[in-house]
Length: 391
Image 1: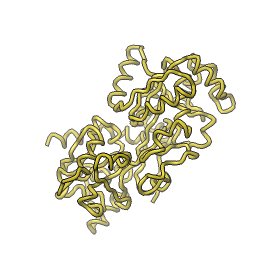
Image 2: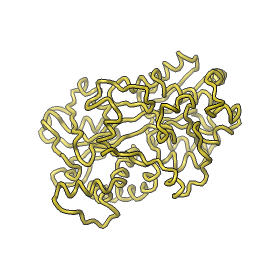
Image 3: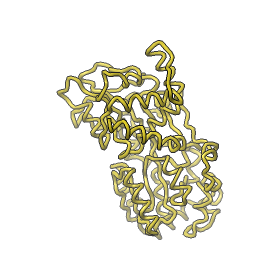
Image 4: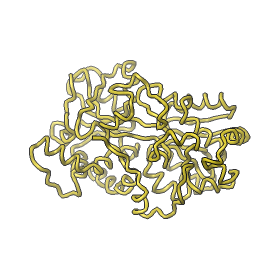
């Protein structure tokens, strides 16, 4: 069953984000009316002019990006070589740090960054955009190659985030159903990034809640009876039981991969990590495996978004960088290796990807999430997580 992205405008209206202005193919009215820009028509499909954007960006002369990926400097080097714009792309900015830093800069009226690459779409849609802190922008000349649902906020690349195991100990996945992770056998043996440090993990748990019917069916298939729960649905019940089963929380998914895949173990844990960890598995002597047939899903589809602060010092350079990353040349540091998939449908992923290099086929085995729904359940998830960590 294919999971569908639920970036519904109705959901946004339902939770009262009335501060959002009308959305166009080029983003929002806000960004078109920002004084630094030449005029609204320049940012529409009809008025957009790539050469004018390049000239305006080069006149600004520099760009500062804060990115969650360690590969951002590679893209920055290519961008600077192509356009002659001095580019600093600070890598490995965890969302928690990126979020707090932008809040402080906006409050102080001293924004120091031109564009952010981050995973927490819930914060972008529930805070950054409605409070006028950032805008999302889709290059009009590339919009035809990008699904509408990936444009607000603009996805810059996707990663499968998967349930993995130690392939030297297990010849096949030791679990076939996610409900098994709630059993005593796996108590204290499920490794995850701490969602308070890596907020994208809240999206995984929110996705489970959003797919409650599938979790109910998976429960019945495993145990031969219908689930009885005090929670709203089976997804909530699964999350509650998983949290209560003493998961191990670490700071980064590199630690997850090492915990599950290091050699010499006899009873290794299971964990959730990005597919990217398979890229360096041989070099790091890690034994990583996964089973795409785990039900109801082997993980979730994790997007990275890019947004531009309203008071960015170099807004045109920011837009040119955004466009660059959505081209084959700019996306190369991510799509040329295992784990990265571009929303631009003309860009192929690496043939080295395990399972499949086709993003559409990954969507058949991953949960998708709605960032607005994720924002709506975030507080309850945090409370549930904190209570479980105290036990």
